[in-house]
Image (cartoon, rainbow, N blue to C red):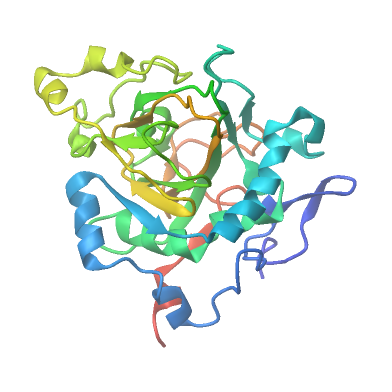
Length: 320
């Protein structure tokens, strides 16, 4: 039995569990799958898979109920309200109360919340997102899926900031090869007015000699900065499409799909959580820790272990 095949977490500090030491569902978001059929029912239709590889994303996939979202939003307060800060806050890989630095354009952004609460832990293992990811990581075949990391993005009412146009893999070249996927889950309805997620269809084919577009804004605040590095053809094809996610719906996008979101100027917050996966077998491309506070995985070694659990294997959905 693996040291992580347990429901009893190791403590980060006295009385504070580190849920990254548990690599199985706890049942916080429903009964864990009991059979191959329970896993297989989460696969996307072939039409949805084809849409993903044609457009670079697929959207409006229901993965949570509104009641589940409300429960997750209670845990969200640990990361938004300083008076309620979680005692395990130091486990986060990153936390920016306002990544833009502009009080009129606030963007809370964090990574690593799956380590802190049972609900966020179970979200990264959720079959409704881990199983479809196996279909979308590789156009040729189903792939076993590992967690890369999770994220959260919150835009407060009336002065929520932007997330500038970008490709995710531009920030992730410390891993190789590129076989990654992003799942964005709306915890509030996303609209044109509150800073909902937008995609540029077909932009997953934009690269520079096999490499992603360079990062133009590490703090996400300069919305249009990416256009300074695009070709004329790319600029002509730069036609944003809003995802208009409902509360509890998710979008899945390719690591090169250009996406971003505008300001929130409504009277309500816009909150989302994101889970990033990669195919089992991805290697480290650096001699530094891949995430702040995690163990070193040397360059050219497989990314696995405590912080990168296997969340789905196609064998689990195969009838014996």
